[in-house]
Image (cartoon, rainbow, N blue to C red; front, side):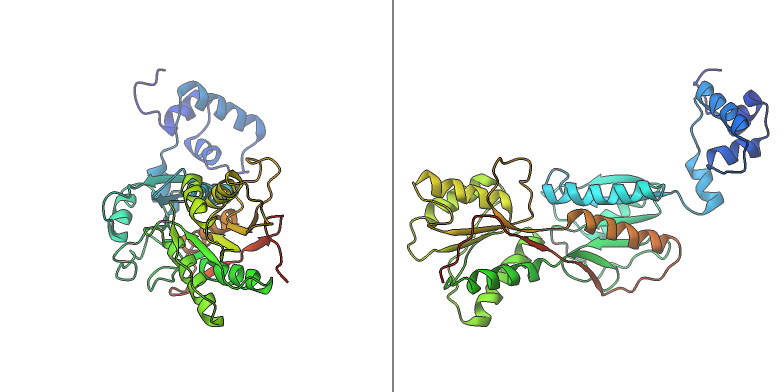
Amino acid sequence: MGNSRFVSMQDVAREAGVSPQTVSRVANHSNAVKPATRRRVEDAMQKLGYRPNYAARALKHGHFKNIGVVLFNLTSYGNARILSGITDAAVNNDYAVTLLQIGTDLPHTLQAVVNRMKQLPVDGIIVILEHNVSDTNAYIPLPDLPVVLISEEPADHCPTVDADQYGCSIAIVDYLLSLGHSTVYHVTGPSSSRAAQSRLKGWRDALQQVGAPIPQTYIGDWNADSGYQAGLSLARDPNCTAIYAANDQMAYGIMQAYESLGKKIPRDVSIIGVDDSLVGLVPRLNLTTMRMPFEQIGQAAFDIVNRQCHGEHIPTGVKTIIPTKLIERGSIRSLE
């Protein structure tokens, strides 16, 4: 039999010499099938090119065993690691993952991106909300399609999970001030990034709380080149003894700028980044950083949406916070 038409369970049953119910048990990984019979059915499936009818399975069992993930950027380090955490958790729970990448060049609403994803066979949706949308709190989820946001700010209608971006900055500034630095300069990420804006606010608030001077900020784009350009300017400021870059790529660019001008790290300046994304990429990595738990964020988001898919009520307006971790290397020195 060729593959020119849909192959049904009845076709497989006839080929294997078993009942359609036995084929269904094999397709659904039931243990109530003898090994020899299972092999015969699987051989028939392979021969005929049988593919499970997931729509029919969903009608019978109430779910597709598939989670949708919406994100703005598939290539960024943080998103890639979050996605890795989601897919690992999905595999461990016998789920598949459907991706929807949306561009950043047009305004988007949460309602619009969820409407696009709900046309696909998914049981729930995780939205990596790295950019601002206008209806974060106005959006009302469908009762039979749970939505979890990976977002710095809690939402009124959806559970949220993320690292403590704001608290990360507070900890970094407090750490540098405790080492005798009178203030901390900041190279921030793009203004379109929710994480960058949260880290910027945390940096500013931490300095204000202790009455430390608030220097001019330098706006980067997450890439090392923007850090390098900021570093060339910062290296000429005699008051700059400590720099907090909003990610490791920009921090590394700053380090390269200083070294290009004959300066040494940390003798001439202390530098700290965020995310710990350069391990294995940069030899003899010397950058102190605040590690972001991206994989754990993805795993936690999957756990929440999976529990909702199975009928558990998860409170909204509350954020699940995954802690960050300071990784001390050799780019920081004490002035005391």
